Amino acid sequence: MTQTLADLGEAELLRRLARFAPPGQLDDDTAQLQQPSADLLINTDVLVESIHFSDATTASADVGWRAVAANLSDLAASGVDQILGITVGLVAPGHTPWSWVEGVYRGIDSLLEVSGGVLLGGDCSQGPVRMISITAIGTLGPLRLHRSQARPGDWIVVSGAHGLSRLGLALLLEDPSLLGVTLPNALKEQAIRQHQRPQPKLDALKLLVTCKPEELPWRAGGTDSSDGLLQAIDCLCRSSGCGAVLDKTKLPQACGWPDGPHWQRWCLSGGEDFELVVTLPPAWAKAWIDLQPSSRQVGVITDQAEAIVWSDDNAPVVSEGFAHYRAS
Picture 1 (cartoon, helix red, strand yellow):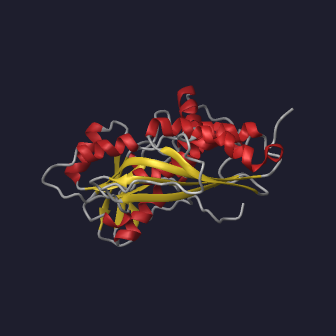
Picture 2: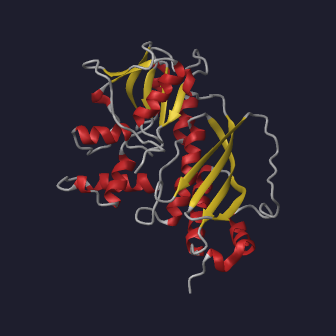
Picture 3: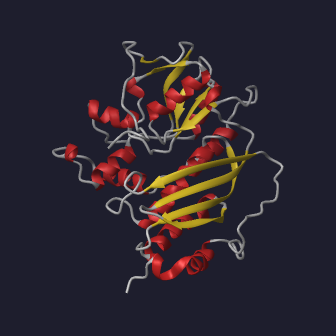
């Protein structure tokens, strides 16, 4: 017989979840952290059933992994040095199987084992749909990446290919738009993996920090592409009072990525790729590209406030991105 959360009750649920945290960590309603010498970075993300995940596309362990990955990606895009830990808020109907919840926490634990950090605590509640809210805490390193730090002349550099998560979702849902399209098996596998188990770019950030030319100050613009590449660039430009020129021939597309407007749109605005999008002085950008093989320059920051155009014809770059409150 399948045990549900209603069968277990809150006390037994918390007892079972305690094994995913350090001994005694969940015995109290608060978590204690020793104050580090560095500034703290803190962020919160929420994943909602049927918006960010579903049983059709995402196993429970992948839900847990993706929930943590979204948070750690934000910390990486801010210049995190060390992941200290996370708290988890879980909402689920009473009929939710315990096995689903256990899988979520296994996924959470799997990514924390790789990235560092521990489960500090959280809360559980009953609700009409499954939701996961995670707050992540880390320490700031020497480079504080910020959206407001882009400057004219900076190169816009991304840490990897874009559009893969959107393609992975389409493959899992057997999207009709893929009918008649022949894709390399390697690309399909890469896309599904990127959708289900995205990798926060903590290693890419470390390389970015280590390769800074000595003569340059610790100044770089940065965000991640959770809402799409174009949206990330737009955020950098708006916060910095700048514009951008993008090169169609340098779009960050994976090997085997098809041509055409549909595929360009997914690359620009597919969302949930969780890559770093940074603006750097050219010398620093070149050094990072040399160390980070998947990274590439996609454009240049200009002094034309909030104008994002193509380099070949100066036409505005337009592509509908992910919107959190658009009606489905």
